[in-house]
Length: 108
Image (tube, rainbow, N blue to C red; front, side, top):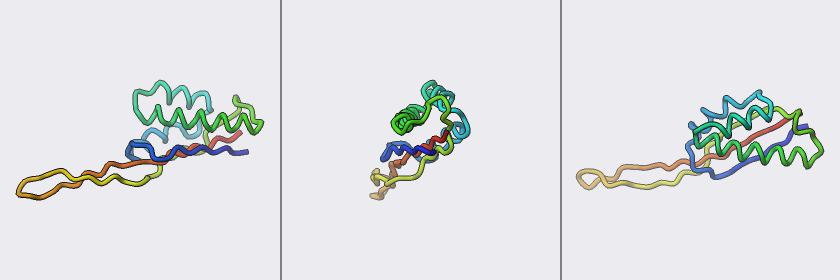
């Protein structure tokens, strides 16, 4: 049985999230959570939150927390906040503040 958790509209670039999420796939829930919580990166802290949410859903459905493994961990692109910064000669430079949607799928 699979359990899915999604954290949406996270203020981190999807490339930074995907860089971290590749290390979680295939690990047991306990190992992935330890990696995420002990990581100094912002993506680690946010993935830890999503992992805990997925594990809580799994326990609610009657699955054993010790037997869970991470089947999928993805940081998909979300909407972008578009801002402008003044540049030389009256021009404007784009600033794109990216958001992500973190998805974690646990399986037994």
